[in-house]
Length: 157
Image (cartoon, rainbow, N blue to C red):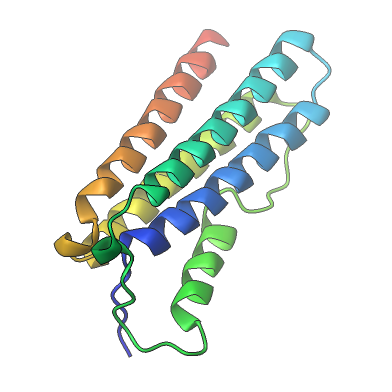
């Protein structure tokens, strides 16, 4: 069975990915002793919180057409599938080498790249009339994260 996902469903999963990201950064901060590095990780967690709120706002602004359910799915299988992807592919519980700030940054960059790949894949299955173009905003937010993390990683050299 194939599913058409609408923008509302994608934004809901984007919110979950951002929650997972915030948790990842906060966990990393708990394991770092350096005050400046800890501060950066907390700031990154707060950015994820802000992005979650951004996506909530974008979700509220969707039109009725962009929220329409397109597939008969009484068991909620489509939502379970998307949630499983969000929870197992992007910012899922990862072991963090608390002795290596560099490793935390590299893991975060990989997770941010994974989120972009996730959103690009979802963009391919969200029909244009269901808010496909709105996914570009999510992708740009994640690209900004990678830029920030990469800059921090390079500063360690």
